[in-house]
Length: 107
Image (tube, rainbow, N blue to C red; front, side):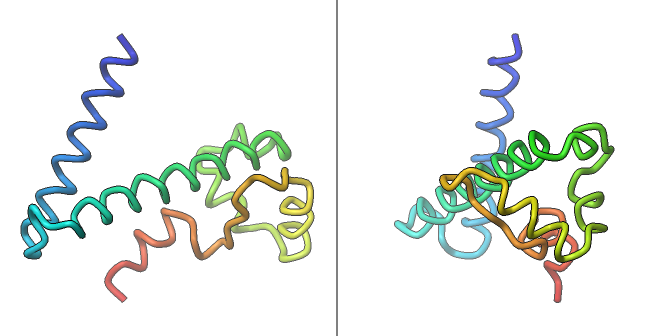
């Protein structure tokens, strides 16, 4: 049941991204595929970063929004978390979180 919901939501997301590409003249273009692929990759990296940070810092796991909670950390606290992460993990700056990008999209 959960897999079907996930599949449906993924297909809807792809359809919405294709609609945006078509609106801006990139429909059925090679760049449409690149854009959709890069959006999924960025979302994956952000989710993986969030998962890794929650494993290191348990108080972020219980927070309503881990991104808002981690933005309250000092620079040195944030650096310490990054140093504890696996070498294979993406290490994002706070300004690269999806919520921050969404909030600043019109600037």
